[in-house]
Image (tube, rainbow, N blue to C red; front, side, top):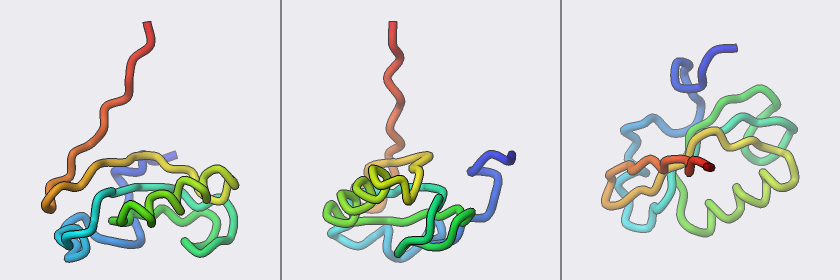
Length: 88
């Protein structure tokens, strides 16, 4: 399986205009597991989302419709990737 970052993603391009909108707070990269509003199974997507959109994506992940692979905060168009916490 190819790493998600090495493949072309559907949805928003990394330099999409949406990234620079004032109300955008999150960027997620995910796989679609079941048919849903985000796409068809097997689709690899990137979206820039508002806080409400991000919460909806988290609910879709809970329903196992999507699997979020990467996420980042977006502040004034800057993408700030979140580091995973290491357990000791």
